[in-house]
Image (cartoon, rainbow, N blue to C red; front, side, top):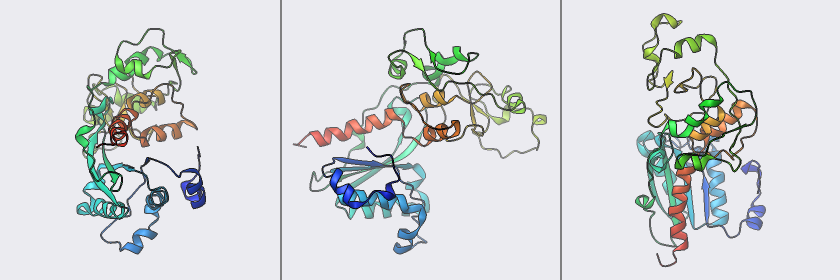
Length: 310
């Protein structure tokens, strides 16, 4: 296992350590693919650097299956040019490429999160295209299901906490550690003026519920997600990478979700420990693929790899 910059990993090391790999998964940024860029400029555009590093690994390893996760706008940006170029590049590696927008909430994640998923199957392994309908959907879960049992820690001291009651839903049982310990549930409240505004927002409401005299400027064009309070009875909005400047607020308390609450809304089990300062932990969560959605996709891919007669 290596925790290093992919750019620094040499070709000979790839050949030495990863000679027999079934699948390569990645989420490289692809903002530099544009109809205004010629091929050489695409290669030189720093925004595409990690994508072409991903391709380098594919070229060296030649796995049976490749998968890329990206923002859903990738499929429509520049009249679909970006995804067409990516499809051409991956197809040149003799992969049958399919892509689709998936919503994490359909796979048991307590969050509405739509992302583009691109999957390629190597033609000389199996000359088929991935069928997204084979990904098994799950019953939808809610914000309450994810974080409701953590409300009791609101006035507790910082540090590791423990849930005293047994899990009473499938999702909560999935989250729990063996000793029911909870990390990163330290409570941080925003500035007083922010608390004063958010207290007027009902569950599912947003900035429009805040009295006008509490705003420093009289704006009518704020995004609908600004000062959005989560509704405990449905799925969360898309978890972002911010903390102090996040748009979404706790369904009951006048603050943003904690690191652990955000992690649960992304479907991370409580055993997963995030590293670094507070802001870095929020970014790790917001940039991640929800584990329950990732598992659903992986299960469907594994059926193809294991079924030699398919």
